[in-house]
Length: 363
Ligand code: GLA
Image (cartoon, rainbow, N blue to C red; front, side, top):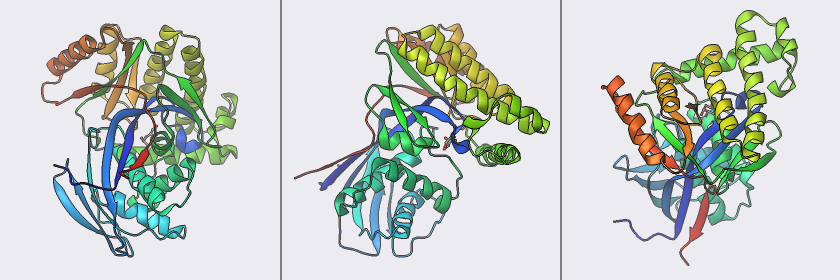
């Protein structure tokens, strides 16, 4: 049983439809916030030194020091880190007691960490009336990852969790942070499939990719991948050309995907996703056998499109299917997949595009 608390916060996860590995070179992305969410029930205290927080999923209650917060390499860093970045901005939030629950799977490539960060920042913003905009909350949450936890991610996950809209994906320009809601068709369903492959390679591979495309942009004297054309790539050494070439094409595909969704061209939308998957697998080398197998199995089973989503190297993929028959589709692909990879423990969810983080108070 959950204790009675003054505040209830619902913070979604995210799934990226397209625009993968484009955000750290300030390109385009198109994620949506999911109905799978983190829930935080919390009551402010006047304690300046600590937060007491329980995680139902992890089965732990922890005391987190917020007076000079330090990272210690576990889930409480996402809580301590929110205090650290807020304090660095001159805010002085007090402590709270709280409980984390919800149905967002942890560490499954649906941004449970961004979801937790936005739950904490959204809550503290409400309690203390900091008046932060949603874009500011997203940027602060990204800084928790970059400066406190030590993960050099882009802004996509935090932005989707902060600004998500029901029934819509967001096409985001990660340079200007301008965005456009794109209606997700009612007759389509997003099936999220976790391959059961732990993403051990993610940190090292992610950072390498990032370094390579940043070096390429540096050589070209550009800061955003949006400003690079295919012809410009000829000035680059082969690996930089290959990696940045993928990013340039992916930026273009985000636009094509928006157009397909807006014109009701489900097949065209699916095709763009599949092309994106093949390109990221071949030229960004961010896929793996399990992700590729899932994409092929999903297409075989009649999906409009499928691709890896999130960082890659394991983790999660999506398939886009007709709403009618989505359950049967998912069950069938699940069986095909577990026949092929009996040692994996995959799981899947059908997700709905939902609102960004929301905070409500009991009274
Ligand atoms: C992770 C990062 C995001 C983004 C994706 C790849 O999810 O957190 O910022 O770079 O990988 O698109």
